[in-house]
Length: 398
Ligand code: ADP
Ligand code: MG
Image (cartoon, rainbow, N blue to C red; front, side, top):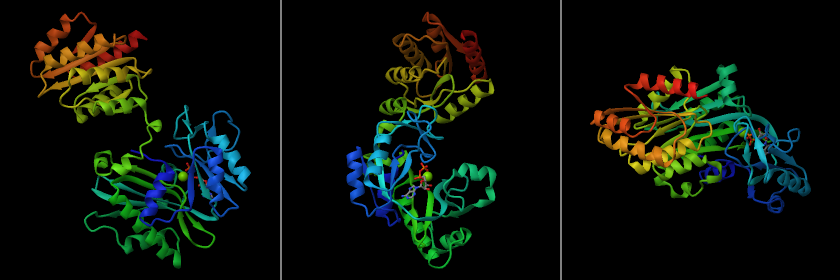
């Protein structure tokens, strides 16, 4: 789960991470009131959306205008900037062409930036450790640094059992070219950030840029904080920060039925039970030359209600040109699944090709039920056969 920059900063601040003062605002007037509480005379008005690249982004109604992060040198300029942002759609490298509607802005104290660095914490699953990533190349996307200047990314793995210590931080501080008092300041900053990361069950905390000011202080100027969904039950206070306006409506609907659904860009909708089988199904669709429209794990107890909900969610994606159902009947029997698929297909009056591959208990019975249903379901015998058939059916229908 993702949250807004201002929410992330508020959480980090409680753990002692240095952030500038700022206030969220929902209207231009509120933005002015927020600015009045700051020392001035320089303010920064920042669009709050769950996507980065806001500074370099453009508003849909003003493609040649300024971006989603603006400097304001007076209260009037704060009002003007907030009015230009709130209610308008911001398009950035991370939002896709559709952009995101800005509903609120963050008004923050202006900062005298001397250096822009990069600092993040995430989990490196390959070594089961938390890793700190740092770079002198702050302000730009880390993916680009990784591609063009990988040597400029410093990595420090941290064993979660022993936690972070001063030497991790000092080593990174020297690598970032910090000196004198800044080394101690950075050490305090990183340890506070690590404490926040572990206590909040975060998945990623990315500070880009981490700035060094003219007077040598260090601040988190941006904050991307996302959480491990599996740990949210321990943090109702974080769950309360969820902004449904920023989430894919299909994913929200899937959540209601405990379906694990992730929207993707392709044209073949997939309905599978088990995350591993779902991944394999997506892979084989690609192998046969098409792209999956989603990841979807209907789980072990795929009831008729859940299968129907899953069909509806898949079909609400306008890019879907065909559906591949790949279900292994282990605890669930294939005949029950077949009945669920048929009922769901009837209820949504299915209009795109549907390939169903069933395997497991009562598989023959399940296949017979589908064959007798009178619905144009294309049966498949194995995974490769299923992928080949759906890709072919979609091509023929086009
Ligand atoms: P994004 O990554 O979405 O573009 P940032 O919060 O990183 O948004 O802001 C983009 C740039 O705007 C920063 O790299 C920094 O140069 C500038 N900026 C952001 N906040 C401030 C601030 N409070 N004072 C001065 N400059 C800022
Ligand atoms: Mg940023």
